[in-house]
Image (cartoon, rainbow, N blue to C red):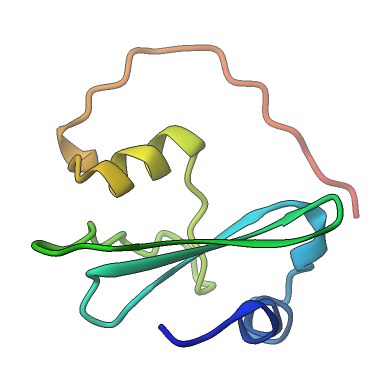
Amino acid sequence: MRKGFDTLSGIVTNEFKMDPLLGDVFIFFSQRRNRIKILHWQTDGFVIYSKRLEKGTFESLKNKTAENKIEITSSELQFIISGIDLSSIKKRTRYEHHFVNKY
């Protein structure tokens, strides 16, 4: 978890094949899952949010795609950071409009 702005944005570009400047949030966990870093591009630069747990671990997310990425909602990220198990959450049915990126 010693990686900084340049290294994390390089991982996003080279390994994830994504553009870190589009405003998406990229989440990185330590191997022991007790630390998290979140990389986010704002209008004029990168921001890194970091958290280290004194006890316990962050939830291990299941890789749902063939690629090495998982998309989660901002609510799910808040639950993970707060220590809430995503499998224990029961979500009521809502309408969801899915935006298709044509680029």
